[in-house]
Amino acid sequence: GQQLNQSPQSMFIQEGEDVSMNCTSSSIFNTWLWYKQDPGEGPVLLIALYKAGELTSNGRLTAQFGITRKDSFLNISASIPSDVGIYFCAGKDGSGNTGKLIFGQGTTLQVKP
Amino acid sequence: DAGVTQSPTHLIKTRGQQVTLRCSPKSGHDTVSWYQQALGQGPQFIFQYYEEEERQRGNFPDRFSGHQFPNYSSELNVNALLLGDSALYLCASSARQGARGVLTFGAGSRLTVL
Image (tube, rainbow over the protein chains, first blue to last red):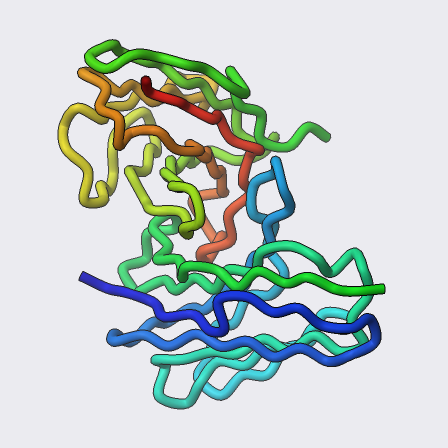
């Protein structure tokens, strides 16, 4: 079945540093999404990407949809303590169905003040 | 504007029992999807309901079943519970048209099977 490989598994960084994480797939996706999950909460959407090569920003976050449609990356600039959490990539195929997303295993981010 | 609400937040069951989890979608959303999130893993798609019918199903046995009501709320039922069913069960809602994969998740129901 479809699988997403997300790396790194965890990161421990100093406040103010930039962060980069990525996600690769064995299959092509037509949509890539990045979600963040805080403890005791459900995932919250950060960025959605719909076109190969697309680069989208949301504040200090920037994500790109890979040209091959098999990968995506997320960058966080000038990290702050509230960036702590688990970041998930998710891919959606072109079936038109809105609910079935394939999630990566997550990248746990810890920020040291 | 209330987001996605789920109940109960936590519950403990024993092997062989049955459980029902409930979800109310975000206002304006008509589609509900259920996900299972094991500890340390990403969410895994169970199934999706739209217009009171199961529209798509992930790789889960038929011990997992669901229902959607006319007000768009939904239930997830799991029969003959196994230890491996212990997980966080997430409900996500979306608008069928134009959502393009964007889901709003609830905080989840944490199920522990002993």
